[in-house]
Length: 427
Image 1 (cartoon, rainbow, N blue to C red):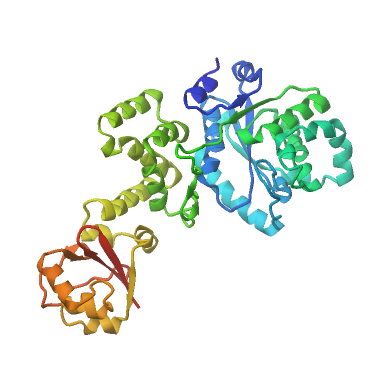
Image 2 (cartoon, rainbow, N blue to C red):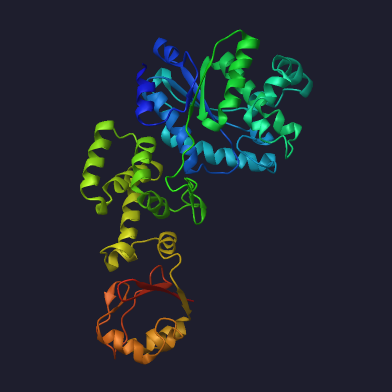
């Protein structure tokens, strides 16, 4: 068995594989590709599965190609979709393609000699292809019966499917043929929902070029509780820090279940089998320490973002869930600060109101419009019990006004008891 296939199998990353694929990988350095759909200007964590297929392909000494779909993005892939998606403008597509290209370059080595990675855009070979030329040179090689047999078509026959989407598999199939003829590309990989589109490409290569090409897919990731992988309360978990902050990204992985963490650490990290099994043993001895989740979150946050972003995310996590200092709080940038305290009640006051407060009781009840403490009496009792902190510093005196260094020039954090936080916004 080829080293690549062995590696992917123990990681649980093979769903379907075409006969002959292993022999091809053993025979020579092989070029393989994965296509990415430019529906957004950032990849999300679901896209990381095919990205990792390319990473493992390159690590095994083969040549990876990432195809960004400037042409296929104009058509829209029907695979796994119950309704047709709105078509994007060329301007939006180009914007999305540039964002995805930058992210793909983080994971692959583009300067390592013979098996250096490449990024290609299928718009480059489709832009001058006439409709008549396409149906004459490509369409005649694939029968309607063959196209109708695909799940992506059969599943949509009752609800309806446009000719545009029906032809998608031919367009993707031609991508494979083009790369086969121009880049000697012999393997296409992707998620298991892409199997039908991929084998249309291998069939086109067989019929039109009398060649042999291969296919391999990874399982679609599912969470143990049945909820959709890659979704959080705010929607997709993106690789772009502007769409999903490194803190939220880190928290997503940190909060996975034990079963999911065991699965995800195999798929999304490059840790060895021995290292992962050792972590699982340690985790089983003390599950409450969440050793597996921490290793997963640290590895993937560092690779997608940076070691500095990981350090900030850990620091930010400790503010709510562990021990932290005023300095930790003050070091957070505004986006991270707001990410950490998303969902925490916010109280808005003016600078004049802040300055007019005469003491701690006044500040925490009257000035904050009784939103933190319902009355001066409640504020007094809590303060006397030592249960109030501002910016992580315990308020010791009831009758003097605490010194407040505003975070990012406009916020301060009030903690009431162990678990109740309020973010005060000074306007």
